[in-house]
Image (cartoon, rainbow, N blue to C red):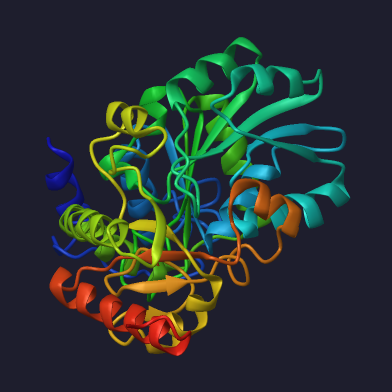
Length: 387
């Protein structure tokens, strides 16, 4: 069955009593035991919930994994994964990294004796030089946030397996509709499901998918023990969002490609970072390992003075953090999503004071272009550069 059909049918054939097409929200936290020593399969909702189970089973199927785990946020999902590691363990991590992940590693996991080295994960020689006897895993974002750096998942996964390391891939920006890292050799996939999977800026959630029984059993233990699980109402909202994922991602990438090309030709813009553009580094890898492109990209302005008036003058596009919803959002990574990354590291990868990140929604592209055009014109006018 094609993925579009599987998405649309999530939860529609799972309710055994009434045949409800929309799976019910089971608000219960406790479940009766038939008798001593017997269980319905549900005992306490932190361990397993009927609504959450439907979501978790669907997520595992969509990502070609063996088990899915729904968490209370994307960061809760990462924390649950990082609990696989302990005192003295070392991770190799994508250089261009979401600021929240960097903060979790450097300010929290470091207190438990877990260290990380940051590297361009396409540079196998550099990764090999960083690999130590205590290295346990490679964590990849691809595309990265916000510079859209692409990693060859199959190549890195093969290298990691040769070293006895786990490969963890953050698949938030492409979703299983467009990219399935486990099919390329990854062991764990993680999502901030708040973004494209939910898709409507109305649910906070994270998802983990694992491959292999031993790893899945370990993750189930951690998921239950840490307890940062997704509640039934949010599980239902996430399932509802997933039903339209294919339609939304098609529109997101269509709009983003048009907007990226328009900005690339604008006199106020120095460059656009979007994997669909032929000049983008990793464009060929992206085409090989995925079936499309995300709806988010970043662009660098020629003058940092344009940033403030652009963010003040956009109207249809909201100046707001987050990404992946039906509404278009624009963010200033240097002071928002990546503020926790030290300035020297940010500048090393290119997250400077001229970079804006644009999560393109599903509005009409003409309206988005018109909004950007007037905001850019206002910025030029206020900096004294309009003719």
